[in-house]
Image (tube, rainbow, N blue to C red; front, side):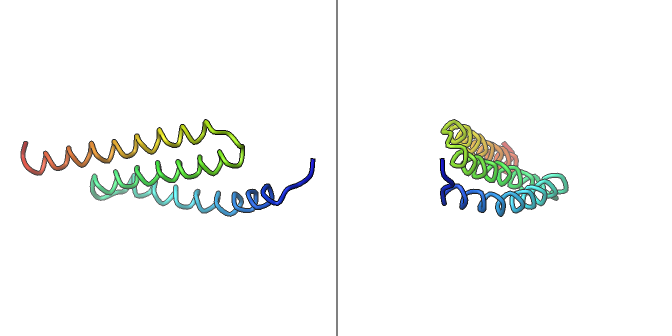
Length: 97
């Protein structure tokens, strides 16, 4: 079994992307903890979820496993529903309902 160029490129991309994801997750986590407002914290949560979805899709391609993409899709939907729920809650609170 030979060494393919796709495996080499995927390893190179993952070695570059993993530190970038760790830095971005750290910054999002700081924003989640220290966020001055609730929308800032919700946005940080959504960004963490979407970055995790992208990373799971990259790992799915690397491991050639379709189940990770399904899990990433479920996580993305969860983050979107969270955004909608918080937006509706904040809008109702602002209107006094």
